[in-house]
Length: 134
Image (cartoon, rainbow, N blue to C red):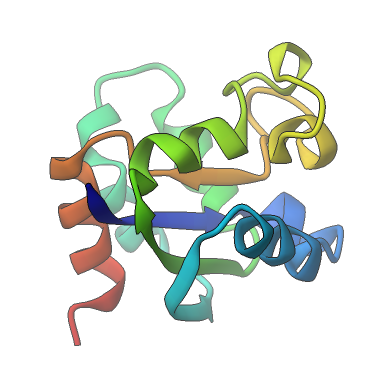
């Protein structure tokens, strides 16, 4: 099934100047990037984007991290894009991610793991609308 999904290159990977390498990984894996933008989230925007995690202990730290520098938001398209993106990203914890995945190559920790990707069709729709509704 042809799908769209959101991918975010997080502040830690932007700081490492890994944007081009990560985009290359997506394109090499067959994704089409149909929209892309670099921006810096405000705390209010980060809290809104991650509101489903508001009750979790990591919420405030996650929001602070996502506001700590610029991010790159992308709409990735392709067959089975949501699951395929999750596979290309690798496990949330880079130390558990498979070799060759983005998080293994560019992530430092479970908190600084280089990229975000939608985990379902519902979250992909909500997250894409958050960044690309205009």
